[in-house]
Length: 95
Image 1 (cartoon, rainbow, N blue to C red):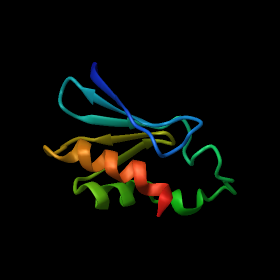
Image 2: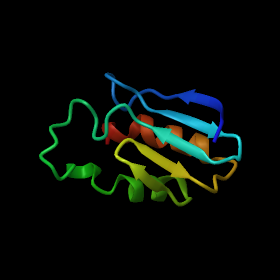
Image 3: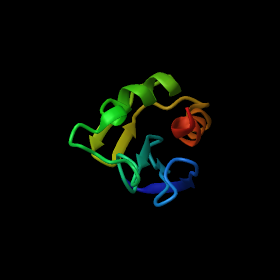
Image 4: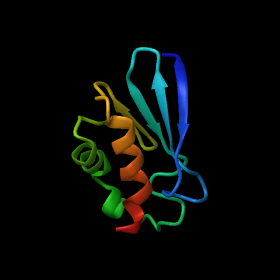
C-alpha cells in the first residue's frame, strides 16, 4: 500500500521518534524505531509496553492491530484519530 503522507512525532523516544504513515486507502500505520523505546531495558516481557496496542486503542478510541514489534495498523481511523494519537504518544512517557 502506498504512503501518501508521513507525520513525524516527538516526545516518545529521543533516539528514534515514531511516525504516522497515512496510506492511500485511508488506513494509518504507526512506525516506531524502537519498541519498547531505546532507553527502556527490555527483560523479555516488554514491561509496561506488553499491551501497547490495547493502551493505544483505549486512548484513541479505535481498534489498533499490532502487526510487528515496531508497527501498528489502524484500519478505521476517525477524523480525530491522528490528533489523539499524536497526543497519546507525545505524553505517554511523561505519565
